[in-house]
Length: 191
Image 1 (cartoon, rainbow, N blue to C red):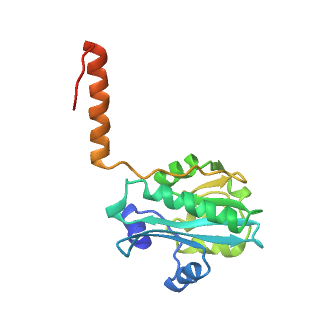
Image 2: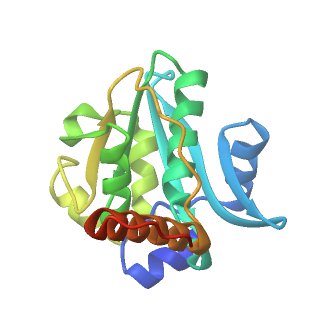
């Protein structure tokens, strides 16, 4: 899912082996969204510099489940898990995705320069598999096409509501319409 999405978007991504992702799941450092037993979303935690920095990486949602709010739920849960597991760490992410930047911003992340991120060579080596690595290298690791974002410590995440179903939206529309007509014409309407 991760590699397919990167190819379709034509953007960079740090490649991870299936074994590496399995390890994250076994360690309890991953969030997996399932729909009838099928994985439809995923994100995992990586820690750097002796747990001083924590990255929420690999956020992906299956095409069939995009634009449903699932990515934000996954990101909120992985942030919460990061803060519970590494309470003293600085949580960050880098991305080229505008949608992920919006989600991060909604969760309290702020854009920062790369100098505020981990100096751990293993983290930056993960960028070698990205199509934009030459840009990062050319700029002495000061910037590339990714935007770096850091979450302030101890952000409290409000519980996310499930998206409204079509029926709930329609019912809300009818109730609002009924109230407007009632106010406008001062009449009683039963729907």
